[in-house]
Length: 291
Image (tube, one colour):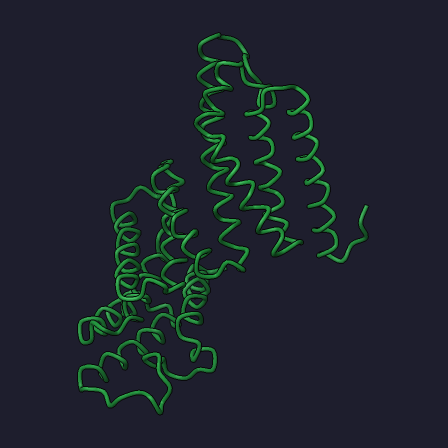
């Protein structure tokens, strides 16, 4: 898929949430019905026009022009919340996770800044909450930045507070908790293997007792939180195969925490059973007979 179409698909998903009128090709309003909207000042009308022109420019892959128009809309009418939301989204859509260039990192920072500006005016704006959670998560991966993962998680938790019946933010919390726990487990294993020389611990081997206790103390609560979040996501969406996959992975991290071989064996079996369940769900979705 061309980059322009990828960018538009990302951007459109936010636009349709923030401004549902776009789905019927109507101009984006200021959030009120035509009967309720007061007469606009000259600057406000020009700002609204610039906002709609920016959407059209983005549809036509004119990204620089879209950015200029959204900035103009914001300058003309600082109260026009969608100008900041669309600016944040255009910056986020151009961010490439892991690319080290200063320009790329600046795009991510600008996206975060604009999303936070939206939230200062409307702390319950789910489009901004989800947008900042997503961009922070992407920024946290390369280079690995646990503080950004933690900040991203706080925004997914805000979504949960506002809409507790949505499965996706529970899933995202679980993924972040797994990423943090997996990273630490890998680090501890690598450090131990270097200290003893030779092959040392294999990925599925239990941790030495002293290391296990440290890992359990530092990451046991994170693992438990992730498991609980993923279970809630699956309660809300029983065929959530991605959530089931990460629950399997967190059960394996939980196996690194427990102290007995029987507990470890039980958790490993639970993880293996989940993988079989995921396979059945995927086959069912594909219209294939279950094995």
